[in-house]
Image 1: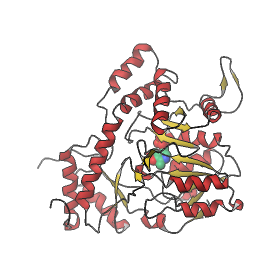
Image 2: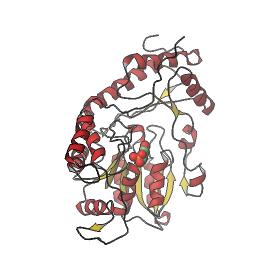
Image 3: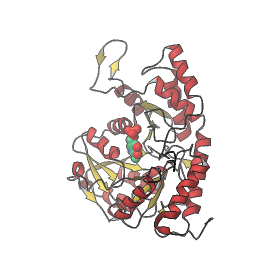
Image 4: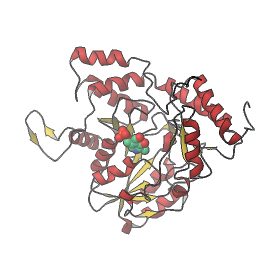
Length: 378
Ligand SMILES: Cc1ncc(COP(=O)(O)O)c(C=O)c1O
């Protein structure tokens, strides 16, 4: 029996002008951290997210770090971070010299709980000066309630929109709600630049400061510096790939939407594999499609079941407050993040996934524990 070709979770979909734009970088000799594609990428992402300014960075984590610094966050401050997110959201807080304060997510969207946030922000002794609202797996956080809570408390709102380019909250693109928002263009994102990030903001002074901080705070043209800074600037090569990708953004978002709809249909009626919740107020970017298993052991077994069929899947984020590097951080948990931690499995979600390969994944899900679907084709 021949082994079927492996199906990855999320791979770059480079079927546009990527090679042509990279060749242009070589021809024009703009390959490093300056060049026309970088500023064009900044303009395009700002435009897509409805923000006035974009600042391109080498990755999303660096973008979060710069946003925190531009917000004036530093030692002695705390930043509210959902307990169920990628480590980068909390690591950036440490990079800024501050401390994450972990709060729980809601069962309805797996994003930061606005009620818990509001309560925590009302108490100044919590020392929370910023909130990082993560749009989990591309599904927007409840932005209206979170921005109202932050506004009332005089606290900065940063959207961690790493995987959420193209997502909308009540019809408005994510990225334009917070004081800052950060996108990632890592290789596993819908739009990749090979690696890269973008901070968007409506604050021109903050944008200017982040741009300076990303380039060693060097006062051109002389080698004088006005603060200690970083080498965080995106390269023209990365921006070339990113811009080519953006030309196909709508096509790739539509492909992800169709994949999600197909999985939804295949899983309808299954109690053992529950699709990630989606809310009416959110239009997810469908970055990654995830299912919730009844227990952590079942999640591991599902990953193994798919692996023997050459299908990649992964147990996704684990509660951060439970892990050694974050063990001493303050937290306010109602139990949702701990409850889903280790039970969420991400399925193949590439925008280039063929219908034949998705059918293979669906067939493998049908075979899982012999469950039979009550909806869709059996
Ligand atoms: C929620 C979240 N925040 C931040 C990041 C960090 O982005 P990057 O890998 O570009 O540094 C990621 C990356 O996947 C992420 O998922």
